[in-house]
Length: 113
Length: 115
Image: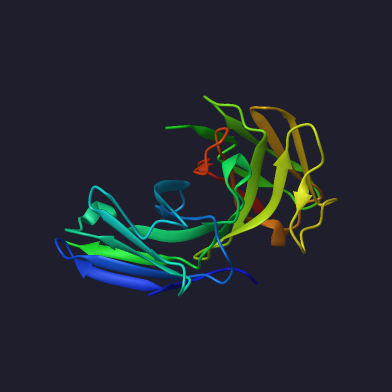
């Protein structure tokens, strides 16, 4: 299986704390994307980082990519209860609309009040 | 952002029947759409790549005669689960990307329960 792994599998934190999730993958990539999924719902795209980028920010999100280690991390700062969801990394092997994604195993984040 | 819809959002059917799920890109054209399957508390597994005007490309282990894919227009792909059995019960999700974009936009998913 080419599926990547995420760590931790589950994370429980208090509101206001930061949450860090890690993703490792196995093959060379064109880009890596992070998605969020609320229980029983579809996926919401959070951020995309290309293979030639090392760090990217979007609001409270910070993503890093280390292609030499084949790993990425997602940091959510000042977490809120509404951030409770499952987070998945997905690697893309080509550009454009035919960008087939391989998903990681996911991290279930719970943010408590 | 781009919007992808799916219909129906959930379906319950008897074993042996066929179920069709539609995936539409509402505000963009997509020559390629993707179909995923997700079991409870697990990740998404790519089933097949749907190509407009040509045959779908199936991932290893996915039966093409079991999961029929038709991508008849640039905004619609359908997945038909033929002769469904209880083990086909799952959450099916489609995705598509606007031309020249790498970001995939996902539909809300279809929950299938086969009795």
